[in-house]
Amino acid sequence: MEETRIGREVVVLCTEAMKSYRLCFLFPPRAVALGCAYSILKRRGVEIVGESVKEWVDSVAGGSVHVLDFEDVLDDLGGLEKEGGDLFG
Image 1 (tube, rainbow, N blue to C red):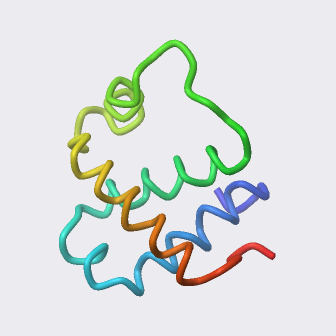
Image 2 (cartoon, rainbow, N blue to C red):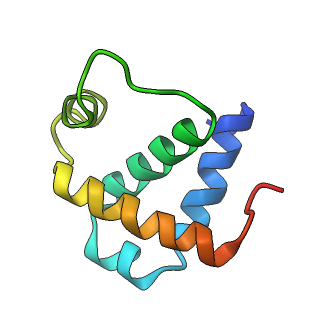
């Protein structure tokens, strides 16, 4: 995963997310990792086309991540990115 720019950015965001008590202890690690990957893909301009976010979450996580957890993780990551400024500058 760290072999590409996107992979490195996902790892950086996951590392920052692990500093958050809420993200570490209230959500499953898979939901946090998926949220980080989605955030980076969206920042890079990749849009999910042809399927809903719920379908995408189910297909990528194999049904093991609840979409509500995923959405809450995205909200927390948004706050984390605002607090941390530009993590990738």
